[in-house]
Length: 104
Image (tube, rainbow, N blue to C red; front, side, top):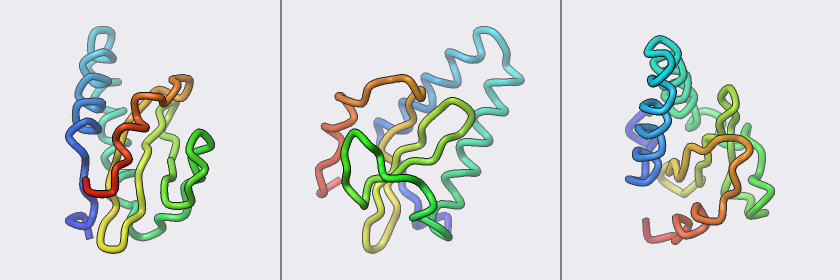
């Protein structure tokens, strides 16, 4: 089922930036966070509605799971789950809104 989880290029960049930022202080913690985020993402297909609706968008198809203090934001689609962003829990999501076009 992992092939049903797709990552937007921006979400991949988010995760890469996050890991590089954490690694400045701790390679171990950076790897642990990355593994936990990837594990959470790979399990989304089994229970996609387990995540809460992202309050900033109010769209039932756009949900999030918290991993430590980070938001794994994804869209439920008919044939796949699209990871849209990985953001710090306190970050505002204005720039993520541009990632919501359905043709992605």
